[in-house]
Image 1 (tube, helix red, strand yellow):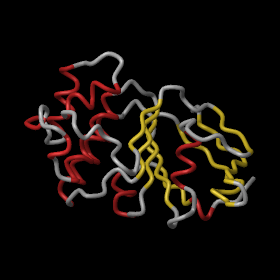
Image 2 (tube, helix red, strand yellow):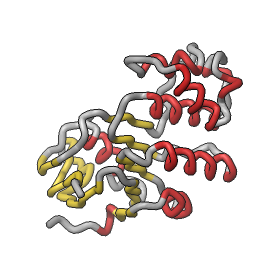
Image 3 (tube, helix red, strand yellow):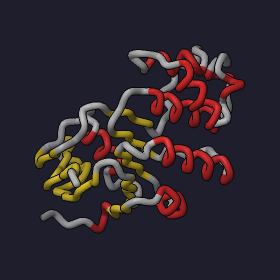
Image 4 (spheres, helix red, strand yellow):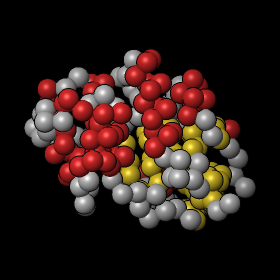
Length: 195
């Protein structure tokens, strides 16, 4: 099975360390959960994998080109509707697909609602819906479920798993329950040694 290979990757911001010489592999078409204490560079690592930051040293091999990202903060267009937010990130808007995703995330009745009128948990699900509507081979989720109650969290995880059976998914979470519910391999970043 082909893998994404992270080899001796480091990222520094001047003298400040993001992370230092980490190595691991991610199986394609699977879910991988990355965990570590706060401040260990998880978000910085995700941004390097996505090409949003350039690593200071090391290699990344076989990273898919088409990437969709749910950031820790929602990064939504607050004055625009739910559907307009989705259209903004899709080159070719597929209404049927978008409405199906919104329905599965309990957002279908809110499609015309301006995002600024939604609760924090609703905005979080809009951010997830928007990412799922994009064209991608790699889905990156950085603390995607904050603000969701337990029932919504579980249903959202189930839907993300079902929807991405053929895709590669990388999830960052602090919550061991979420990590185990997502399934797949759990990588404990703070326990990795460079190869």
